[in-house]
Length: 471
Image 1: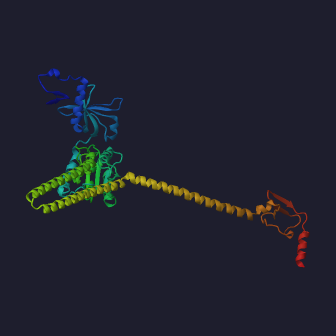
Image 2: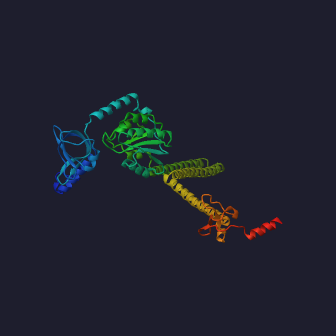
Image 3: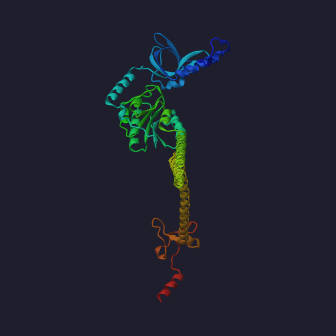
């Protein structure tokens, strides 16, 4: 049975029953085939017929001595260019093959342009590859094995990239109980290599992890060059923890893929390779339990058959046979009890493992910390109110004491304070401190008075007191 562009041909002679395509349907089918067969390609050639309409997109033709190919570079992708395209330049364009259905033309949708061709970087790649291979960094013997059930996975990646979201999505589907940490680094540019090396050293020294995953989406050779640097390769080789390289698409290949303990074609595939499917595990456990029960049943049936045969042969030994049957029943009961106990113990261990995995879930720990923060906040507010109440009571007591000893209260009862003129401003308590014609300043409860002394003498009241004191 053959398939031609979505049309099934069962009989070449029965063409009248074949489907008749519209032009749009045929172009859509061709587009689907091309995009499926060529999801990402690199094409080398010379730019010609370059034009840029008002939309800002770049339309040009890639050509060599024998053929040509239409190409388009959309405006949003032009910010990643290291040089300006021009007619006559030899470039390597990387992108996707598609069909512009209204015109029935296939073209290259360009993602990146390499203006230096495949020469310089490819030579550096091959040179470093031969050097590290000669040192044995690619040997399978030196690579570390991966745990079947990783306890903690640390991703070295850019948190804003799509690759990390693909990894986390697959991880949540397969085994969400495994905690996953993200160590943010730049995965493109000059600083990317140094940040990746520092991340590997920090995770090995301080971070609790069982597996390290280098995670990045696809891109050009320049975009992925940080994973082709020698320092990154040596950092991966010296890592005490197993390192998984999940860099680029399946067609991309880097030095990190060769040095790493495991190379995953994509970040999503890395999650599938590292984490088991919980549903498959549960089904496997159920399958093993069922197999155990079947084998136990088969064993019991064989024992029953043997017992029946022995009873037939030893009919004259009825008492002995009865005793053996009784023992068999007891042992059967013990075996069933033991089997149930083993199954219950295994089920209990599985439930405890699930509980531990649940407790290590970052969301559970976050909820516990949020509850603790709420309790601390409530205690902080209560302590603050208690402190404010105590301080307010102390302030009221101090204000009452201050009011009791304040001279203002005395002045309010009709008394005043008399002082000599500045700059001395001495308090006058005796008429002998002043002279007639001098000035005095009197401080009242409200306001002050400036007075001229016309007469000074002792009060009769005070003179009487002095006389009484003298007697």
